[in-house]
Amino acid sequence: MTIPARTPSSHARLQGLAVALGALLLAAGASAPLTAAESEIPLKNADFEGGDRSTGTNPKVTGNVANGWSDNSDWADVKVEYAQDGDKPHGGKAAQRITVSKVGGGAVQMVQTVSLKKGKSYSFSAWLKGKPGAQVGLFLRRVDPYTYYGTTKASVTEDWKQHKVDATVTEDADVLVMIVLESPADIVIDDVRLVER
Image 1 (cartoon, rainbow, N blue to C red):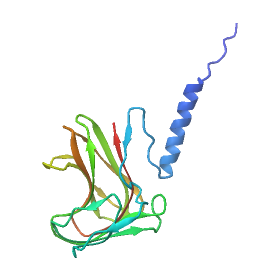
Image 2: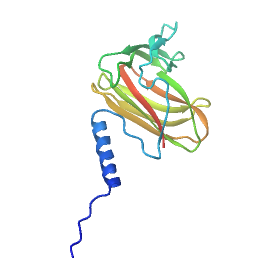
Image 3: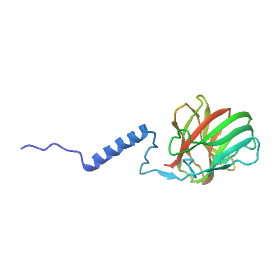
Image 4: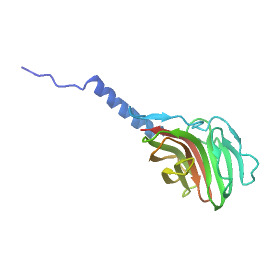
């Protein structure tokens, strides 16, 4: 009696295809697909395509920041210019350029507020490029009182690279998703993402 060789189930073949597709998308610069235990927390204008608005009349902070985002640097001794950048964005037609020419004290902070849940873990990621060696902080910080749930410093290169910070939130809170520059730099940011795990 001959026993037929086992063949993979259609479920296993589909899983294999999904893994292969995910690897292909990552190699092409796409974000990793979510697992069943993850969910995306929508950020306003996460791809920086939705237009921009003036930063106001503060001479230290000039240009246009993407809709849905705010500059939070008016307290600091900085000089920063924001601009929409259409020269080879990571995805779509535009990205956000941040050019910092002076940091005498404090930091440049581009922020957005989200509501996060106690006991949940989050991953905040951003695609960055710019003048090599520039250091960019990715922070998740409670609005008030200040509590840092997660911080990382990313070194940018001339090519797009995804950077991320992981954090666990210890109470229901309004949290700032922050892009932070503490020294002169010229960077471009695109396709940010916040995932709950």
